[in-house]
Structures are given as structure tokens and as C-alpha cells.
Length: 480
Image (tube, rainbow, N blue to C red; front, side, top):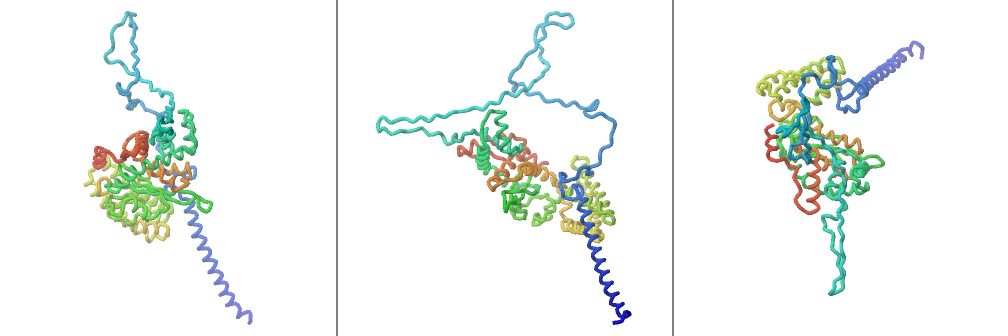
């Protein structure tokens, strides 16, 4: 082959190589863009938690300095600790002046309305120990020996209030079993082992089974429910912590937790029941897609982060994101007024009509913006477009899932401190104690008294206390 004949073949070969190089460059540019976007993700533009943000990550805009000193300002309303009612005071010390501070004359009588000053002190905590002595007596008739049995309800070495205190320190205050032992030793002089704490946890778990089942039945009939889920670990599999999930369903006055090995729809269907007909507020996780979209509200806090992600990508995505964020800001401004009672719902619904149309239009524009990530997010949001606006027409339904996220945050902190649970049995205790302490906080009830009563009734085979709200609380929740 002559040199002139080989030139076309070389050109073709070079063209092939050039095409391959350009394709490789394109792939590397796309990979670089994905990595840069991932590097720029934080809690303001993605689903990542704030705890994962790098130091210095900007969130809310800082307030402008006004040149005032920290603390209470001149003229502000005074806040003082409320005095304990007179009937609850343990001791009264009367301070009577003996002579006039002006003329030194002798003073008599009492002030009908003396100035009150109270000092609150904690008395030394001391464990009360009861010893049961089982006597064995010999029958004078047949000679056999009979020993009196210790009553079943007191066969545990630890009383109900002490057992309730252990569970409260673990479940609400998130102390490890070893720290619980140290606290009870330091404060009350009670000596016990880590194994004793674990055994009492399981007894408390059994005592709480019926009240928690009652709470589950309650949320299945609630008018409005918030639902959320987060990662958990349960036990060890193949040398690594086994993956699980902590779920929560929260009504106004009753909150239920469950630890499951699945993040699928069967868990939320089990929690709420497939015949649930209340309003459900969630994020956009696919496990909730089985539910009627006309009864579901998706969280606008998550949408806010998505819109910020549009903005951060720049270009056409950034322009659409800024317009979406503007509509979002208008909506929340009006919603806060509806919540505060300064804007009627009828006027709010009227104002929201153009906002709904504009948001829908912008999301459809995002489908063709040329940025793959933005197009995908917009497509997923539009699948649930009907779920964006339920709160506009339904009183009691909020535009965010903040109530569910606040409830599950207690479990997240527990997980970070304890690294999850080691067994199925441990998971049952955690979900039950979290259900009880969170629900009682919503109802402003004393958790120590409830746990003490629950353990007392369990040991005696009596009906347990109820986690359900009183009729007054329930009526107030419906009105809200």
C-alpha cells in the first residue's frame, strides 16, 4: 500500500480515537459535575441532616446587630418563677419586725398580706428497704416443715418506683445502663448491676405492652397523623451492625414508635392499618405512596431544600428554583397569618390559587431545563402534585411534617448515644418506652408516676394505666 493510500485509513483511525476521547471527556465532565454537586450538598439543599454539615455551613441569615446588650431589655415584661401554692408548702417561717426602723418604737400584730419568698430544697434521697422474713414452722401434729412464701408481687429485688426510675433514665434521659447504675448509686445509695437494669427493662417492656397497643389503636383512628422513619441498627450480622429502621406515627396527643427491619410500605400499613382514613402528613418516601393522594400532605420543608438545590445548580435550574422559592415564601407568609388568626382561610384559599398554578407551571418547566438532577426531582414532585396543597383546604393539616420530625428526633439522639439495640427484645423495650415518654410529654403527664403504676399493676395482674388522653384533652385536640 502506497503512502497516499494509507492516509485515509489514518484519518479514519484518528477520527475514531478523537470520538472516543470526546466521549470520555463528556463522561468525566458529567462525573465531575455529580461529584461537585455532592460536595456542595448540605442540610439546606438536600435531605442530609444538619449534623453532617461541615463547619461554617451557612443556614439561616444572621440577624442584623441592633447595638443592644444581650439579655432582657429595659421595659420588657418581667418573668419570675411562680410560687408554690400555700397548701403545698412544707414549712412556713414568719419574719416579724420587732421595732420601727424610723423611731425604734415597738411593733405589734401581723401583716394580713405578707411578702412571700420561697426556698426550694431537695431532701437527701435515700432508698427505702423492706425485708420480708419467711418463717419456717414445724407442725406439732405431723412434724412437717412449712415456710411462708414471699408474695408474688414483691419477689423482685427492686420496687416499682425504682424500676420506673431506671426505665425513665434510659428511655427519656438516654443514659446507658452503666450510667444508670452510677446515678442511682450516687443519688440514692442503691447498689445494682448492669444485668439488673436489663432485667428490669424487660419487665417494664412487658408492663407497657398493653398501654402501647392501646396507643396504636388510637392513632389508627386519629383525624391527622404525621409519619416519619429513620435509620436504626439492631444486633450484628456478618460482623456488622444489622440495618433496621425506627418509624413514628404522631397524632396531636399520642405518638407511637416501632423498630422494624424494613423501610417498606408494609410497616406503615401495619402501624396505621390499611383502612386508615385520616389525613396523613409525610415526606416523599415511596413507602407512603399506597395511601390516597387526596388524603396525604407532603412536607414543604423537604420541598424547600429541593428548591434550594435547584438554585445551587445555577443556570436554568437556578432561575426556576428562585421563582419557586419566591412562591414558597409567599405561601408561608400567608399560612403563618392563617395560623395566627390574622387571615381567614377563605382569603388564604383565594390567594393561593395563582400560587398553585405558578408552582405547577415552574415544575413543568424544570422537566426540560437540561439539568438531569433537577429534571428528576421535578418529575418526582409532580407525581405527588395533588399532595402539595391539601393543607390549604383542610383545617388541622399543616404544610410541613415538623411534628413527625420533632418526635423522631428523640429516637435519633438515642441511636447516636447507644448505637441502636442488640436484639429484638431490646428493640421492643426502646419503641415502647419512647412511645410512653413522648406521648406523656404531649399530654403533660408525669412519666415517673405512669411507669410506676404500670409496673405495680403488671406485678399484681391488674389492668394497666392508659396512655389515651382524657376527654378534655381529646376535645381540645379536635378543636385545634
